[in-house]
Length: 275
Image (tube, rainbow, N blue to C red; front, side, top):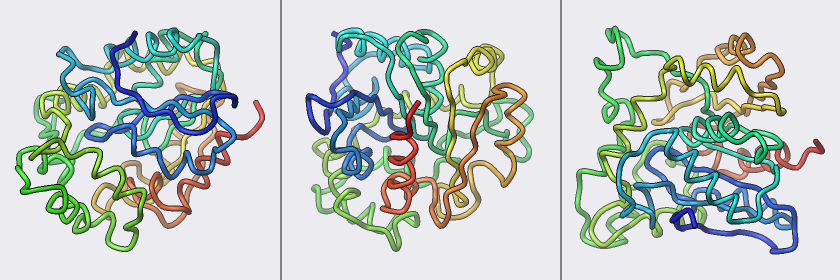
């Protein structure tokens, strides 16, 4: 009923969770985490403009995605559940929790969900080059690839996966390949990326959260270098979310916190903690 293409992992009889991917990704990015939640049912949609939902029209934006997810969960029977989000997906699930708190029992935010700092030299969001900040993940959207193997070679050379190539990464990348191009729509990336720097309506959404909220931080970033959030930066957001639980994950970057065993295991363990 939401129109979103969706991957469902695990058992139909287990408790249900929702997992939401990052800005140029798709629902198959949750495969490594799902493998550790086998007695749970994990719903992992492709957001509007990505994966098999890439034919869904604009507008995009965090509030549109949250409305799409609310429709998906209502169609799934409603009810509050644990909701996970990675990167931009963490921002989306914060908006879902603010829009429909009846659908969210707990938030698990993976290296995302809190406003990003403007890059040096940028006075406002109008000065930010979203594609440049995302690096290879965004640059690939402008390329055509000969075939799926050519596309896999691109991901193998990505600095984030230099020592962490795995079947989970390969499965995600194969699903992402859409004929000759990646599946994500560049306009969706740009529209969504512009909302990650803390507009007042998003700060209000954070202030409204009353369910348990945990955020996991990666010490390295999108290209295995500078992190998305500097050490200690997430602690400052307790002024907005006083009950925030900040979890440091060792030896991962912005991608391998989700794809590598050492990152996926920490996410799964947190998702399984009793409410």
